[in-house]
Each structure stands twice: as C-alpha cells, then as structure tokens.
Image 1 (spheres, one colour):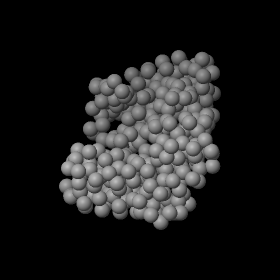
Image 2 (cartoon, one colour):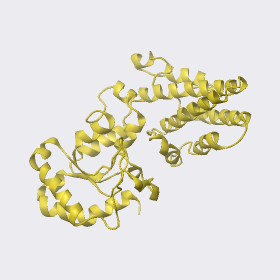
Image 3 (cartoon, rainbow, N blue to C red):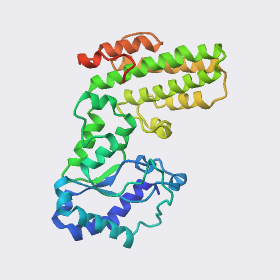
Image 4 (tube, rainbow, N blue to C red):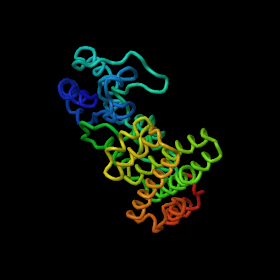
Length: 311
C-alpha cells in the first residue's frame, strides 16, 4: 500500500475515533492530511523509498490560537496513538538524512508553509512568486487533505496551487525558453564540434532541466524535485509525452546529431503550445524569439523590465 493511502486508512480507523473522543467540538478546527517532504506525499513511493526519512502517519494542522488552546494536548494524543495503535504493517525507516525527514504529527499552519516555501501563507508579492523554487511550492501543495472544516489550511493550499500571477508565469516561461534555445538549440552541437564532450553534456543537462520546467509551467503546475520530475510529467494533461523525449536525451546511446534532431522536435512541440496558449505569435522553432514574445506580453512594467534570463 502506498504511504498516502496507508496514512488515510490509519487516520480513518484510529485517528478519527481518537480525535472525536478526546477533542469533542474542537475536532472541526483541526485540518488533517499528509503533505510535504517525501515521495509518499507525491504518491511515488515504493519499497526503495522506505530506507530513509519515511514513516506512515498523518499531519494535524492548527491555527496559532488553537495551538495555544490545545496544541500540547493534541501532540500528546497523537504520540499516544502512534504508540498504542500503530498503523498496520507500517514501519518507520531507521535512517534519516540531514536535509530531509518524515513529516507527521501536529504543526501550526503557518509553520508548515514557512518550512516549505519560506513564508507562512500565500506569497504576498510577485517577487515571492518568482524567486521561490518551484519544487518548494510543489511540496507545499502535494499529498491530500483528509479533513479541513475551517478551510484555512486548504485555502492557502488552493491559492498557491492555482494563484500564480500570469505575469510571473510568463516571466518564468520566457526565461525557460531562452535557456532552452541557448543550451540545447545553440550550444549543444557547437560544444560537440569543438570536441568538448563534457561541456556538451552540461548543455544537454541544462536543456533538459529547463525544458522540464517549461512543460510544468505550460500546464500551470509546479515541477517537483528533480528525481520525481519525469514521473510527475507523465501525469500532466499537456505535453506529457515530453517526459520520454527528455529522459531519452539523457539516457539513449544515440549520436549527438540524433539528439540535436530530438531537441528540435521537442522545441517545435513547445513552440506550438506557446502559440496555442496565446503566449507567442512567432512561427520559429528556435525558442529565443518566442522568449522575447512571451516577455513582451507581461503587463507589469517592473517584471517586464527584468533580464530575459531572470526567473
């Protein structure tokens, strides 16, 4: 059973009775679910995932006022539940890394978002939207909310998921387009012709990274941490076939010329989608002119004035 399903099952069979028994009317003030760090929060976990920073559990998100009123008691109740009624067949990993840990238990709503995106709720200005890494946003909105009667936690979550300003999205898309053009369409074959195979490999990696981010932006979704990016891309409604194209550029043992042809094919797919979304009116397959076309459509003068590669 996947970790997210196991967390929901444990919440429904053991968590709900405990909360209703011990917290009465306050139950409706507690948001419950699983989100944040870890492959299980994205639904991508398997047997290998359980070797570190993994445990079956759920999170209880509460307001600052409720933390003062009953937060400590809720923490003790959750710890007791884990000890006396542990999830069936679920074992926590014994290894942990310095940069990641399994998330479960009680946290203040603002602390959860601050931990993942650096501030306690919805970004307050375009700079926070533009410069916060997409993988951080992805962690803040992944997983599932099992219950949230107050709607505070879910309201922040939904606004982050669907509320990126269009000018910020355009700026990011413009930057990805120009990086794709520079690294893949221009520099990759030039590096090979110079005999710089290492530099060509770096150019190819830069192209793939920016192309993957572009695909997510065109789907109005946040690209997750790199190790899950191809897995997540296959589930997108638009351009999901780019996952195979991009992975193949890194793994298929074909010639540089063959990879260059694949790069052009993929850039043609991206250019078509840019036109379909009304982001660019250029007919080029080369993505640099599209980058400037996208940026020219930004309404906010301050964002439009940023360097084409910024974002």
